[in-house]
Image 1 (cartoon, rainbow, N blue to C red):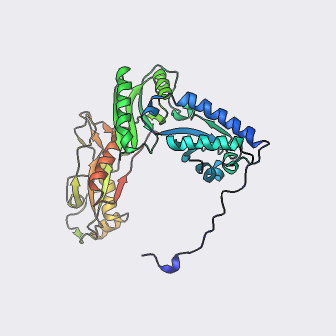
Image 2 (cartoon, rainbow, N blue to C red):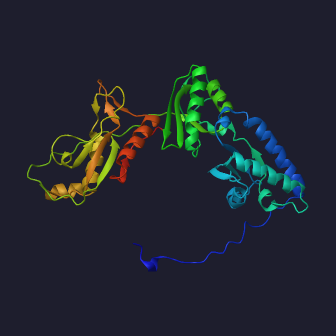
Image 3 (cartoon, one colour):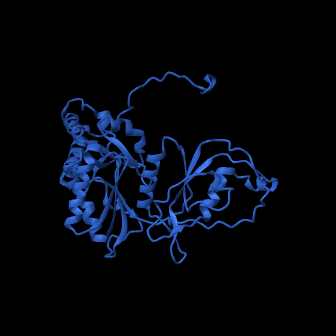
Length: 364
């Protein structure tokens, strides 16, 4: 429990959403936004996913050099919900809005234009433009959009797609990819985060982006790697173990934890070997064993070994996601398969395991 003296209690008086952004003519500004809105609808509302999704994703901006974060409460009062900020340009951000609120937004916009006092001007005056999210901002910089080479890709959709719409979106994607004879794998993490694994060339990437409004990003589906750990000296047989301090367990996604001896294996509560990469014949063990030793005994393990008294803190659960093939090569999971492994393991263990460890490297 938090001590009462550490809790600050202060009354907050809300004072509204600030001053209007000055416009030479609020009505003319509204007409410009209406033109933006109509152009947006013409481009985006024909996209295939908006036939099954109730949210539409778009980009709003404020005046140049004005931080859009300062105006988000005003923009949200018009029905928009912030999705992501643009860290290269502080005046731009991506938003989503559902069908019903978009209709209300259009009605308010007409009132802003035509009413004598330009109703809602506090909110609308903050917006400089309404546009589709540019396709080029959705493509990872490592991908050459003009290349005919096929890339191993992840297509990530914006978070927040409604549960009852995900099946319809999956069917739509399946039909689209089947018609174009493209292979793909569909993942729906926690009934809200949709990801596709596929292989596309530049022209195919352009086609997909032009047909789906809800795509957040397209990136390379890269494999993870680990560094090798240095093998330590042999430990004497007369070492003693204290009782383990906690009955809790840390779940370790790594290269596997050794099965030899008793210093580590005695504290491995479970081994989940179903996520080893295809083509491997066994876990790699080295790095995962090192990580497990630190989780079980802490960073002063060397001192404990020197004193010949080991003080285990907790147990571990082993989930190897790196393996060794018949040639001795270490192979790791890619982004897509690792995300599935983490999701499935966490969903099965979350009631008993609260700490998960990943010490993995990525080419980026």
